[in-house]
Amino acid sequence: MISNTELSNKGNSEHCSLFFIRSLMLVAITQLMACQPTVTQVARTFSGPVMGTDYRVTIVAGSDQDLSHFEEAIASELERIDQSMSTYRTDSEVSDINRAEKNQLIKISASLRLVLTEAIEISKLSAGAFDITLAPIVDLWGFGPQASTQGRPDRAQIEALGESIGYDKLLLSEAGLRKANSNTNIDLSAIAKGFAVDQIAALLSDNGQRNYLVEVGGELRANGRNLEGQTWRIGIEKPQEIGGVQEIVSLTNQAIATSGDYRNYIMMDGKRYSHTIDASTLEPVLHKLALVSVISANASTADALATAMMAMGEKLAVQFAQQNHIAAYFVIRTDDDANYEIKISERFANNVQ
Image (cartoon, rainbow, N blue to C red; front, side, top):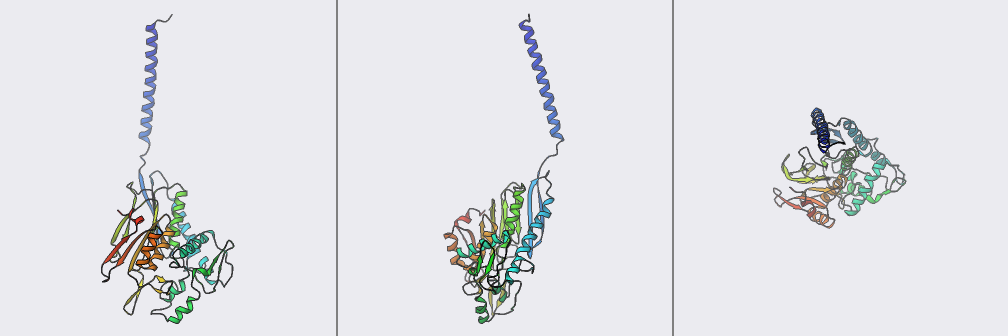
């Protein structure tokens, strides 16, 4: 027979043994954790030339992650897009389209189809303010890869080219693309950079990255947090000051694109002619809108919409943004051209710091 005292002693002994085992396990775990390297957040940046401009991709991840393979993957994806959509490359898909004859069926890649589809949609939405077929007119006025003049072109030249201008001359179907006019040319410079940004963002997200900032030629898309654990903060350039910042905006899983006339323009007869063409007159815009920034879920959309509103001018552009619930920021010259007025749509105000 075992006495209550013996049971008590036995229970205490088992309790002490269990406590001792747990203590040893805790010590072992503590020592194991002490041997593990501390994982901190680091930022890795990849950059280089592409599409006649530069790209810069910053990834924020744990110090234990090997991000080196992204360098080649990013460069390869951007090269693929450039090969398809560049007007500067004679072997690109866009160059093939521009050489094609009327009604000739042109097979196109899935990526190019996406870009053309969105371009046509935004052309319709903006009543033609955005139009990728303006390339010959852009060249005629001294801009673009095939610039052909140093002065004001003859009106007869403009009207002759006008016969081939118009997004409605692009006939997109499941089989491919046809042109209604042999002389219709396209230029995707106002949407392709944004599309490239979106593709790199998808590449990173598909490979487990959640915190990054992608930029191609000034069009940006931000996801997650920066190295300080905060939302990404982006500066909108001040038109009258190179390197100056007009406004700071925060981006949370969003893209931003900017279009302006303060860098790319020509002076003729004492007037400033923007590289942005008014599709209704086939001449450079002469309004007082200096800059438009657009925030959207996709960089391609922001890119095209910023260009469309830059072509509209300040009054129409502000109305267009409000009517279509677009997050837009406008910098408008005053009558003396020395000062600027700022207008912000309701949706854009949420991102202003």
